[in-house]
Length: 343
Image (cartoon, rainbow, N blue to C red; front, side, top):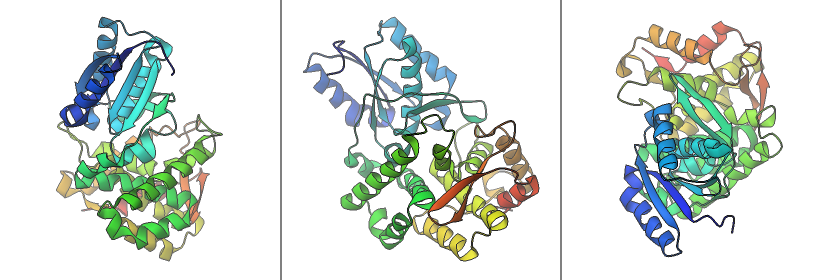
């Protein structure tokens, strides 16, 4: 319906190569599409220029045109990377998302953000580029490892914290069946999280106002993610980093906006019920507490939300309502990191 060009490149990872990608390739061929499969490693370390160049090589060698289609089949890493490539090849080729993780479904495939990391800065090089379609099949979620599934729940919690107290109550009341991945609960969570994200994005695609609120917990969480990453891979999944970031920024809300202690306890308890971390030991991830907090501080200074070199923080003044604040002192931020990073 959107193109006469029959060339399709499916970008996926090793996990989905045989489970789904090959089947999709065969099905598309029955409709006379010329389909090529590009398989890459799905880890966070793949969000790099090296992988981008590999994909450009595939597109150039096989002579993919602007009206040909790239299908991103996988989790957030695949969607971010393949989406960035699609947005820049001939200034934009057709992009189609098939997110296979909860994180991909509720967050990264929605809203048009595509990006890669540069050195130790998350999503440093990116674009805003929307897909022609976004297909979600909750059956994919059944095959996810526990940590990957639980990681996606952190973004759902975030949506509730900034916009919908009823969603928080639903998560707490149904946490056991949610962890058991009951289909009706999944549909409810995915639907409501997407509605909240779309509501924040639709009039602010390039993140100058309401869309910023979707970064709640991410400024500190991204810093923890990158500071603990090793040469061989990640220590924390993205959602685990977000959960730690949420836990840390709660203390900023208490100190800066008189956000209630009881509500902070409520949020931490909810995260723990969903098997998400709210603190961790620096020594158990190969660091001293002092050195790790200093690494987090340096990485936080590179946060993409800063304006005129002044960091902007998303804070809660009450459950279900967030706003953007500046002027928070460094010592307050360090105390926030200390609240989740233990010896």
